[in-house]
Length: 109
Image 1 (cartoon, rainbow, N blue to C red):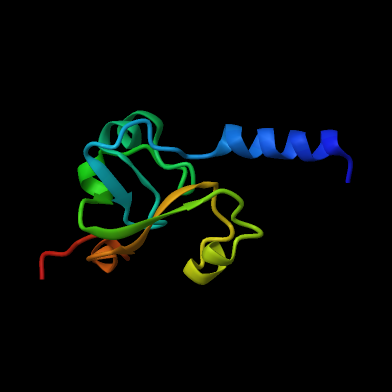
Image 2 (image 1 turned 90 degrees about the vertical axis):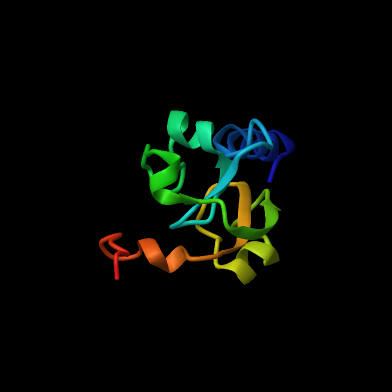
């Protein structure tokens, strides 16, 4: 592969990355575990799930650890987390209660 093709690929990956623009009020997406500030989720939505939503509805503050994944297709960390098909970004290692919003999202039991 040529150097310019690699540079184009890196630039494209950087343009599509979901990087937190602030480190206050971080939330993790319940579905894909992407970590962003609440306002960024509300403004831009989730780049993986394709949804714009209120951070309180589909995001969780209860998460542990964060992994920054730059190249999900080639990353062993992404493979270990099962995140190889997602955009580059910061991901929660574990979201506590992430199964509460599976299905219909009704957790009134």
